[in-house]
Image 1 (cartoon, rainbow, N blue to C red):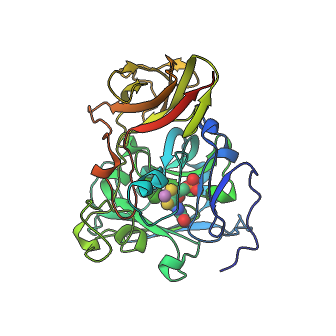
Image 2: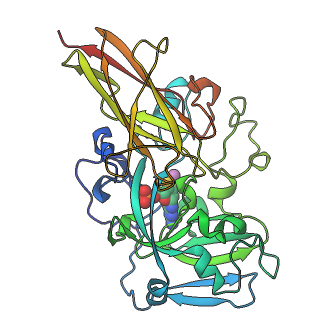
Image 3: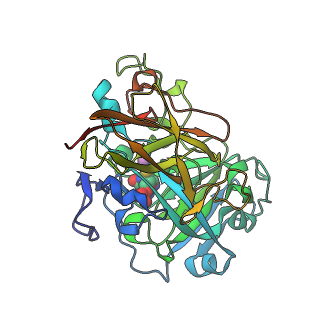
Length: 382
Ligand code: MTE
Ligand code: MO
């Protein structure tokens, strides 16, 4: 495949793989509520497609619908526009740490394969109405139950074919699920790395289902049979290895679990003051808000609760109806650091789901969904 037309990228990104381009920012870049586009992680499975004739770009919608349709970018932009603040997280976020417990297969990521952006675009539920699928329905008139998104990129896992994924029609046709066909990111035209001219955003769900460079939408009876739905992005138990794996036994991962990470410190850090600021992000999938973030400086014996912020420094209240449902919260705590400390953060979501303490309990051979307690080791400069 051809990597001669890759877009320019910020030089400070940590490149985990050059071709395809996979990179994440340094931890500290995640300490602003809205992640700047330059510092938003980039996760690709092939070269970045070139779309230069925007006038002729359109998305076809077909499959089990009575009125198949081709919709142009111009027509998509004329539909009601929504701005949704949503966190996108790769299922492989924090994989490197999981691999330290026992080797896993996949691109290595620190804690920054995640970002929070303002996505602007049309609601998929509005677009589906144009082909005769009414809002809040679970199947199309012709029996379609899944909505498949097909890209124009070329991936080796698909034998040179395009990246694809699907979500349930119930979620796609539900306006409250806020699934978008997005053409803007943080108020700017979506750039090539993030899916220009149009991508899907499925809030609360692992990034793999938010298909970039959207080419067509198929209404289908069974879920998408593509590689990334059937042979990847599934959560296996720790007992499954590459000799006994049976991909059919697990479902395609959708919602991500409760997650948090400390971004104000690197893994092994020296702090200069007796008081250190512990700050980072916390988020849960499925629109479940963050209830609490607990911090420990003594390896988990005692805990204190961190302050939480959402919406550019407004204090976070979990009962606030105006909160950004799909967005992360940033947390902060000032702690007295012992000479040598293991600082831990763990979050609790609105359903009282808690992050697991140890990575071994959730270890899986593909290294996805590492949500174990995030720990950093610090030494106080004396
Ligand atoms: N869409 C296409 N067409 N090709 C891809 O490789 N990668 C997916 C998803 N959509 C991918 C894609 C994965 S695994 C993730 S985590 C997100 O896009 C990453 O989106 P970003 O690069 O905008 O951060
Ligand atoms: Mo991903």
